[in-house]
Amino acid sequence: MNFCRRCGASLELVNNHVYTCKNDHVIFANASPASCMWLVNDRDEVLVATRAIEPGKGLLDAPGGFNDGAETYEIALARELEEEVGLTPSDYTRPEYLLSWLDKYDYKGEQIDVLSNVYWARQIGSPTINPQDDVGEATFMPIADVDPDKIYFDAVRQGFIVLRDRLKQGSL
Image 1 (spheres, rainbow, N blue to C red):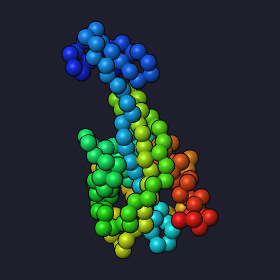
Image 2: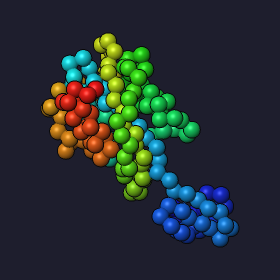
Image 3: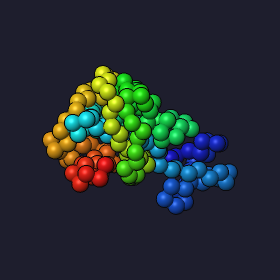
Image 4: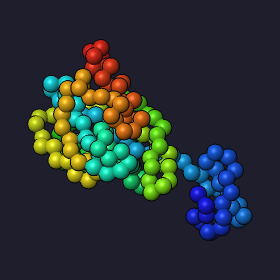
């Protein structure tokens, strides 16, 4: 950050994510919250999205995204699933938490710190998956066929690994 959002004065980095200006305004550059969800069908296949835009265009992802304004993770997750693959909360069980992770998001030459929460849920019925927004393609794949190295974001990859390992152990 270069300028104070309160008065426009130049900012000085004080410590990690804390900035101040000559008018004694303190600005915190906290991580932006985001959430995503791995959806599992009745054949233990996982819904895998392919990114249609940068960063990570062409690589794998789970449906999800940034919280808008004052949204909880759960509200943001429901909104993002509807925006990205056309699913509503009636199409899946209550999302269950897998992990949180700090990630980086490249946006127009800037790296944004992201605090990601990764969830999973079971699909209910056979809803139509409709890729849209930043999802180019979304398909169910056998979990064993998903290469974690092709998942773009660290948080999403780590969440997938936790889900895969728990499903293998039968603990979900």
